[in-house]
Length: 149
Length: 149
Image (cartoon, rainbow over all chains, first blue to last red; front, side, top):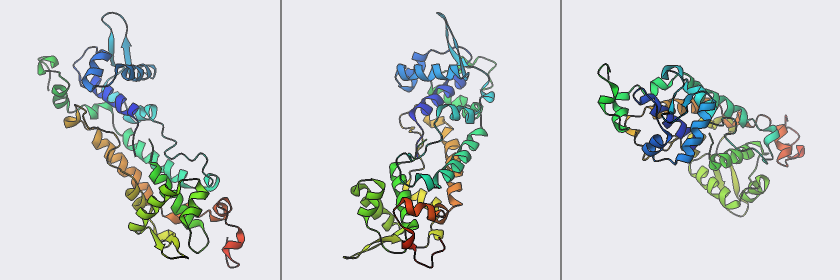
């Protein structure tokens, strides 16, 4: 069982934005950090901006940031947006499809899967920010003197 | 989110064996019905026979059948056997892997997914045998006069 690369990139992007010190990030910076092509990352950014998970600030000093606080970004909502959750098996052309009950079991199982994501927000993924930060090249100084990290 | 073709074929094979009238089936017959290559189906059969989900009877009049009654074949056990359930996202090479908590959410969600399968047996997938049978080319006469179908 696999999630798509698309969800993978979206999760990395959101974790990056949720871990970084306040401010704007560039797509190039995030692509570089994760060694993902800028083209791919651009598509994910545009899509997540359209869906209002993140916000793009235009202009010379522009960049992207989370559209709201990490604890207000539900992971189930994010997963439902990035992942196709209705076709875990391709039944097209299968001769028993009209009478098969496997899709019912699959959709019950998928609902249980997403329900776990629904319990969490992006804040849960970045709670170890003090450990994530250095891995992403954010030095302690970036968090400012008031930082509790 | 997708299950592998391997799980897909294994499920079709088990549904076929659970739907058919008592007796043995050949791999060719099943491959033909589902339009799946005999080579692929052979691998699934060998693997599921080794794992004792089905039984292969050798010899000229040989064939395969379920290793036990459909209601004794748990779908969670079958899924755990056919599907890799530990790597829904490929974290290899990701720089935040040492501090990332997404794998924890993923494994909790996967456990919830499999727990749904655990509630069902193959009997639940073939309960509509009277509808499945004709789709697989089993005429009513195959079920015998005593059939309740």
